[in-house]
Amino acid sequence: MTVETENLRELITKTRNVLFDFDGPICRLFAGHTAERVAGELVEWLEGRGLHGLLTESERDSLDPHMVLRAVDRRHPGSDLVAELEERLTQEELRATDSAMPTAYADPLIQTWWAVGSRLAVATNNSPRVVRTYLSGRGLLSRFAPHIYGRTQDLHLLKPDPHCLNRALNGLGAAPSATLMIGDTPTDFEAAEAAGVSFLGYAHNDRKEKVLRDAGAEHVVGSLDTVLRMLRDQA
Image (tube, rainbow, N blue to C red; front, side):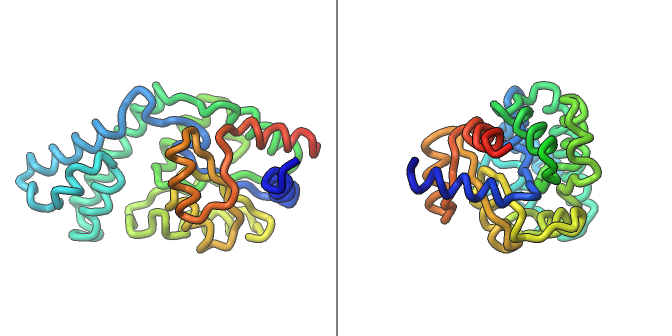
C-alpha cells in the first residue's frame, strides 16, 4: 500500500461529515446542455440590452456562466440586473437537470456514507433549487435535506469564499476537523482551506488532476470507486 493510499484511508476514516460540491462530484450537470452555450446565451442577453461593454473580452470568451455572473455583480452589485441574470442562469441549470449525467459511483457512495452514520451536505455555486431537483430525481434528497447550501444573490460569496461551507458546518453542527469537502476545482480547494476542513479532489482526467494538484490539493482521486471501496472496507 502506498503512503498516498494510506493517507487517503486515514482521511476517510476520520470523516464524520461530508460536504459535496454538486456539479462534478455528484453529476455532470451540463452533460447534454453545455455550460459554454449557457454562458454564450447570458452574454448575448446582456448585449441585447445594450450592455456589450459591461464585460471584458476575456469575460465574454470565458465560456463559464459563473464568471459572467460574477463579472456583472462586480460592476452592479445587488442590482435588478444581477438578480435577473442569476434567475436566467438558474432556469438554464434547472433545464439541464433533465440531461445531467450521474458521476460514476456517486450514488452508492452517498448511500453508503449515509448508511454508516455520516452527515452529508451539499456546498455549491449552483442554485440550491437545481440541487434539490436533481437529488429528488435520483432518490437522494433525503440523504442531504435540509443541508443544501448553494448560490444566493450575494454573488461575492460564491466559492472560493467559504460562505456556503460555513453555512453547511453550522447547519450540521459539525466540527471542521471531522469534515471532508469533495470538490473538483481549485475554488473548492481554496474554500475548504478557508473553512478549515479537509479536502478530497475528484478529477476525471489528467488535466483536472494537474490543476487541482497545482492549486495545492494533496488528495485527488480519478474515480469515486476508490473512496467507496475504502469506505466499505472500513464499515
